[in-house]
Image (cartoon, rainbow, N blue to C red; front, side, top):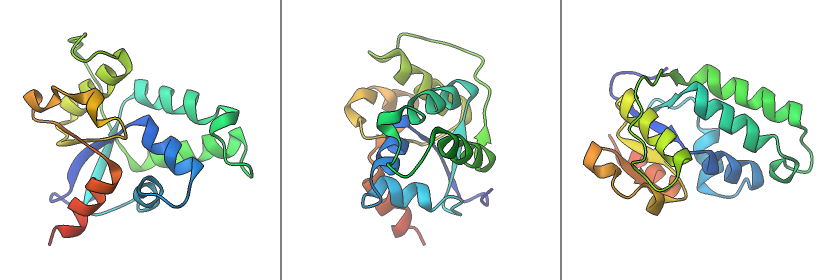
Length: 146
């Protein structure tokens, strides 16, 4: 993984869906940059299960890709991640239980950012020292670092 200057983040499932659907956006650029010395991304078993469920759905697969291709890509991402166990639950903290799962992972792993297209869904995460940020904004942030 990255050196000690790397910021720790969680990638919300919607970022991977956007990257799978289009090679034009910030989500694809961010995912394509993995591994990246500027950030480490953290993963829990629960989030990985959600990634598998969502990314292997036919409507989320690119036309030239199969469910097996998606599984292989997810295994690659998992191999590049920092696995984090989550031993506490303080739900409900956010309106959506799936978002709570992401927030709990970010907190347990000491992440500074949750990268998501649904920034508004993570309102209140700042109280825990975690900022929700769109992929384009996160890319801008890491590109500015010396």
